[in-house]
Image 1 (cartoon, rainbow, N blue to C red):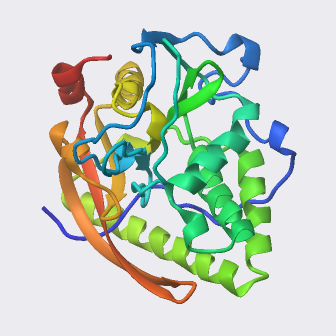
Image 2: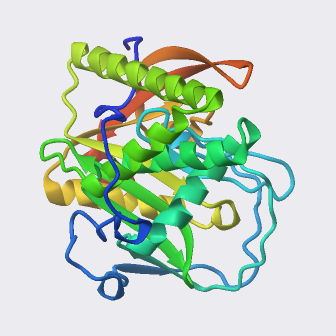
Length: 317
C-alpha cells in the first residue's frame, strides 16, 4: 500500500460562468438531449410505506458515506471525488409516506437542490457565513458535475433522496456552463478574507488529490473510471437507496467496459461502507488548512476496486 493523495481530474478553478441556473446543466452527459420530462423512469424500486426516519447506521465512508449519530441519526451517504468525504449532517426526523424510488437522469432544475444538499452534507454553514457557505457548495457541486459522464438522481415523489456521479476517464467530458458558474463563484469568493481562505482549502485538496493519483500510478494502478460524488439524504438512509445508486454506477462501468475504478475519501467520513464492499484503500495523504481561525487536518485516501468484483458480489440492485 502506498502512502500519498486524491481525485484524478482536478477541481479546476479554471472556469467561467455563462448561463443561468436553469440552463447551467444539460440533463445528463450520457443522454444530454433528453428533456426533463423524458428522462425520469429508468429504474424503480420499492421502499416500505410509512415513516422513513433515521436509524443508526454502521460505519459508512465517504463516497457512500454514512454519518452515525444517536437515536434517529440522520445520515448522509456521501461519495465525492477528492475529499469526497462524508460530513455529519444535522439530525432530523422527517415523516415520509412514499413507496417508490425512481432513479432518473439529472434535470437542470435539480441544480439548486443538489447544491443545497452538498452544502448541508459538508456543514459549510457551521464553518463560515451563509453567503460564503453557499458559494463553497456551488464550487464543490460544479467541480464534480462538470466532468460527469454518468449521473443518477434518486427521486421520491419529486424529492431528491440522493444522487451519484461517475466519470469515464478514458473519454473525459466537460460541462462548460457549470465550469463558467464555478469561475464566477470563485471570483466572488476572492473578494473576502473568508472566501480566500476557502479557496486555499480547495487548492490544498487539489494538490493532495494529484499526489494521491501519482502514488496510485506509481503502485501500478491505471484507473478507467471514478466515482466522483455520492450522497444519500439522511431521511432516506437505511432503506437501500445508496446501495442501489452505487449499483447503478457499477452497471454503467460494466456497460462502458470499465474494470478499474476509484474514489476519494478522508477522515471526515466513516470508511466501513467501502471496506464492507471489498474496496481497497490504495493510498493515503494528509492535508492541513485553516478556515475562519480553526486549524484542521484530514487524512485523505484513494479506495479502488474492479467493477467485476463489485457486480459478482452485489449485482445491480
